[in-house]
Length: 154
Image (cartoon, rainbow, N blue to C red; front, side, top):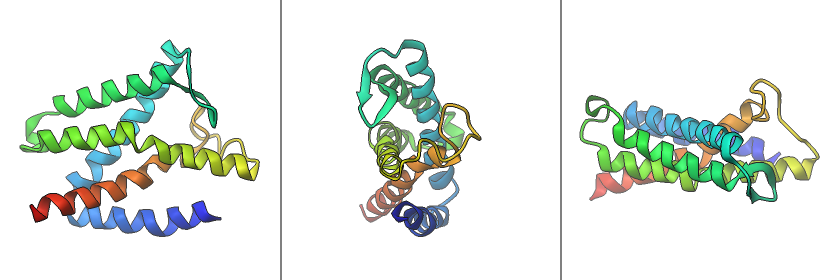
């Protein structure tokens, strides 16, 4: 129930606030989270040997590190005309998307386990449903808004 409240109230509020700051501040962070999630999944399947966290048995240390590396590399190789002098902001957003945002996925996993649910759906095989694709967006949307607010006040 609490997860539903977070997704229905908190996340849309911050997404809306980010959109008011410009399309970049909505799309780029969303894409970074999706890129990190997908990169971690692929790297974990390809090289994964050591478990990252007991709560999510399919997540591996190699996948986590691979996700970080690929997300940061992408953020720094995004064409300049897209990010328009936002290189250091892109790096900060990429690091957050890689290092912190996955923990909202772990939070969702904990809530699923507590409710006795393995996956929220089967739309994306191996990802546990569409909600598992969106769970990391919760932390990312809040961080993006707070970060943008901070840099505007500097």
